[in-house]
Image (tube, rainbow, N blue to C red; front, side, top):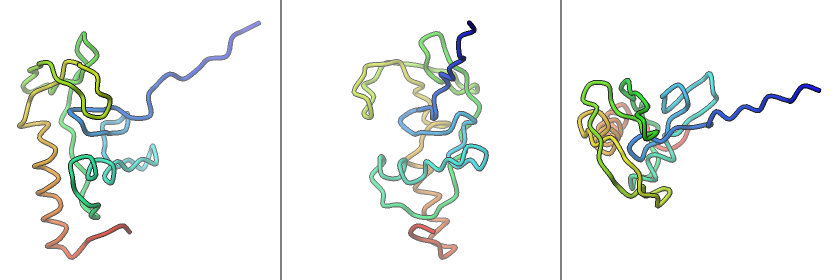
Length: 117
């Protein structure tokens, strides 16, 4: 009897406290995924209909943590979402999500978008 294959691929990936689909997109039509509201809330914002974050290319290191390909630095931290102590990419240039969300919210406000559509 053949065993059934089980898909163990996670529905999302967490990179420096923000969540993305497995295609590294904050908003993905292929996955029917939109992490903007969760990410906004996590970083202390009310949801705004903003452009999704761009997640720079990254690689999974030997500790199972995503690091940006450009800078690839890692350190230790306590993950606020899970409370676990894990290694993490410390690259504020590539994974500075709060700053990027702030910029996207400002652009959305200037374009006259706010709230959920």
